[in-house]
Each structure stands twice: as structure tokens, then as C-alpha cells.
Length: 119
Image (cartoon, rainbow, N blue to C red; front, side, top):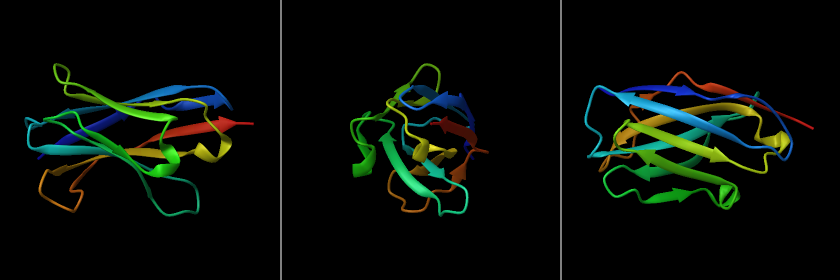
């Protein structure tokens, strides 16, 4: 079992920045992939990006490239999502998720953190 807890959400003006954190516990993460998803009100959950914990390799959905950056701190077992140049359409609940490296299903989810971008 992996427990994931997000933090860092809040209200920010358009053009601003936020950094979300996802603290992981329960397992060593060397065989896991952690990712970020978001869900806007009335819309389906959307993949943002992921990080392979062992290598630090990251990948993103195309629309997030350049504005969003995922990183990790091994010592703190924490993943981050740095969001820059935020737009009102980035308003959503942001979730971190985890899966084993070879798996396709995201088995572990945090409770989510609200990000609101005002225009």
C-alpha cells in the first residue's frame, strides 16, 4: 500500500504560480511511477504528467509542456508539481496517483487539492 497526501493548492491570479506537493508513505518508491491528474468541475479526470521514481524521468501531456514541471525529492519521498503561467482553465482539483512501474492502472490516489485560478 502507498499512501499519498497532496498539499499546496489554493487561489492564485492568472499568470501566477503554485507548487503542489504529494507526500508518499507506506512503501519504498523505487519500483513506482507517480503522476498528477486533474479534474475540473463537470469534466472528466485528465492526466497531467508522471515521474518514474527510480530514474526521475518525466513525461507530460502536450498541453502542459513548458508550464508544468514534475520533480521529486527522494529524501522526503515527495513529488512536486510546479505550475507557472497559470490560466483560469487550470482551475481543478489536482490529484497525485501511484502505480507500479510495469502496471497500467493507477492503484493509489490522494484525496486531491483544489487549485483555483482567477482571471
